[in-house]
Amino acid sequence: MLIQFKIANFKCFKDEAILSMRAATHLKNDVGQHKFSPIVNKPDYQLLPSVAIYGANASGKSSIVQALSVMLQMVLHSANESNSTTELPSFAHRLHTISIQEPTLFEIIFLHHNIKYRYGFAIQKNPNAIAEEWLYTSDTTKQKQKEVEIFYRKEQDFDAHSSFKIGNTISKMVRPNALWLSVAAQLNDPIATNVQMWSKKCHTLSGMRTGYKQFTAEESQKNPIFKKQVLELMQAADLGILDFEVADIPDEEIANLPKVIRDLVADKKVQMGKSIKTHHQVYNEYNLPTDVAFFDMETDESDGTMKYFALAGPLLDALQSGDILVVDELESQLHPLLTQKIIDLFNKPQSNPNGAQLLFTTHNTYLLESMPRDQIWLTEKDNYGAATLVAVSDYQVRENENVQRNYLLGKYGAIPYLRPFETITTSPQKPQPTDV
View 1 (tube, rainbow, N blue to C red):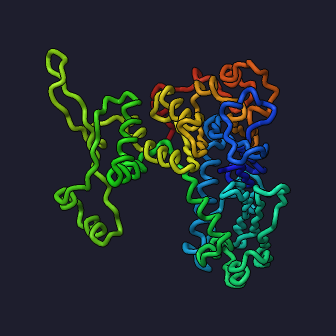
View 2: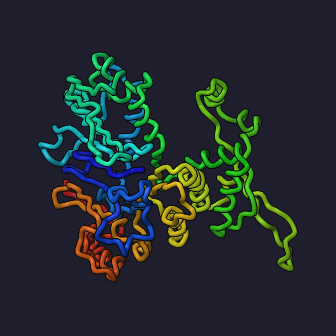
View 3: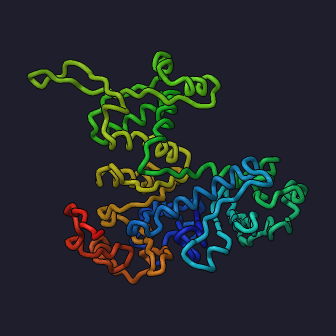
């Protein structure tokens, strides 16, 4: 489970920003029914099943999701996707003369098999190198949870605990622009492998795109039980869908594609998507069911239906596996009541027995009426283009306060300060004559 994520000097976040999944202890009455406790009688691990991030457009919400995605991809692929000349990406805050020269920092704290891990690194663009890298662990089953330093790296100076055997052996072979942990995991170091295994349990999605609907389609095609569960979610959403079927793209359709694409498919460099057909009821003049119509998901269904189908697979997978699902713009193309139901699947222990977590960005203020205050986070930019991240529970909020109304009134900040739109010129302008 995710405990905390920290970044610094990442895009609009010039200073340190920390997102915590810990339940606020001073809000027991507010969050009690939503807590998950994977470790009994340990208050530090009362972790929230869902967190929403609100804020104005361009205030940093998507940057939180992107930063987490960047970190996970580097953990998983740094060793095999870079060589000595590969340029590390630059994410430094560009609106300040000092920060643009400083490293970008990532750190994540999570639980995996009763071990708490704290892992992080800093990217230095100039020179093209990992400026720092560190890993600490603690055994949560023991009475005293003393943190043990597994390794610490300062540029190309490496210091490792005796338990990090493979990592210690290969330290001199780690490239300046590669993560020590990623290289060690490639050689099956057990500690590094555990960090990678957890990273694979954290999935980041964009709510504006439905490209990941192929995951839902492929899993439904392979597993009839999974397909049945997806169909139940579709039918519960009142989309008018009786059933759906998934099939491979017919050969005749592939034959009509341009030759360059056909060659890539033949060489297995490009994987064709799936054909998804939905079933809808047909009625006669007496409104009696007479037949079934088959709709193509791509051309006949609405964007909202495609978005919901795309979410259904990752959502079910996360709930069944106890994974972390991170969605940017969760509510895009979805009705507010439907969005609420998705969040409820994570918040209710009956539908989330394995402790899955949902982290999402949103503009849907309707959700504020039912969300506990420590599950609501806000992003806001200052006058100099630097963003901050804060939890609503950090404010002095009364127990029965209308959080939705006060948020829209600007009590907590994190809303746009809009100039009068009436003064904007919208009529076409004729070119003015010029003297010659």
